[in-house]
Length: 317
Image (tube, rainbow, N blue to C red):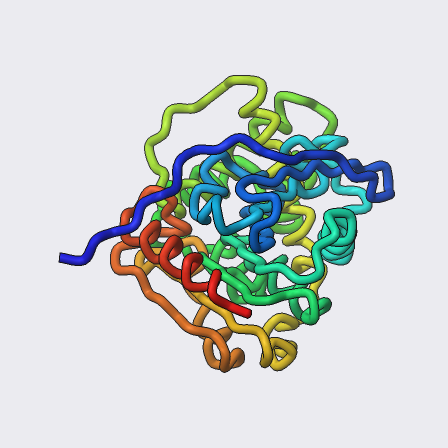
């Protein structure tokens, strides 16, 4: 019987700090593991998400210097939930500023969900700075994927959850579902904004496999939901600040970068982006994890696959 690898032990950050990145934003970063280890940047899900305490545990803390970035408006970065001066170009610039500040020449870039979108956009812009990509739950922010999530495609699989997500906004009376959420999430009435944020996050959590969870009314949780929802809608209304099919059309720029793509076979949140990427990026290696849902941070097979591949990447020159 094959031994399944587990997460590494929890760790405290060995380094941390803030960066002033312009536009009134300050972003927070932290680093775990070995300060002189192989540099690895992990980009979290979102848009509007922030690193979790579990994120560094996928990577060997003796071999890696594991860097986590809290994106603009999310996590410990300030101001919270702010969408002004918050675009893909801004995120790429922040990553480069952090790399320079930490005196890192090249690093492995890991991403989960929306983090794969940012990782691919960054690698295609600064490919000389990327040793390899390790991506799980691939999302390209394409028109087809957004239609799946917010146009009713996934709703056909989960009609009751879709009805809760879509009907309360009265979107049919306005200008579409995303626009309806954008209006409510930025209306200036706190309780209405928090309700919209909760509904947004509940739909995504449902598709990700986290169902029937009791509502958490803790102020910190509500603030996190607001950042996630407001920033997500901001990006998706603008197609991720990407040109149509940009990440596929520019995949040839990754020809000298090895890539590992990991996808759960039961991923209902981002089920389609990985397959065109496999075809366009010839140096990528695909791993389908049986029974894994989106990202599946608690799924033994997904954990094993991510940990094993992160160990293999340590041997890269």
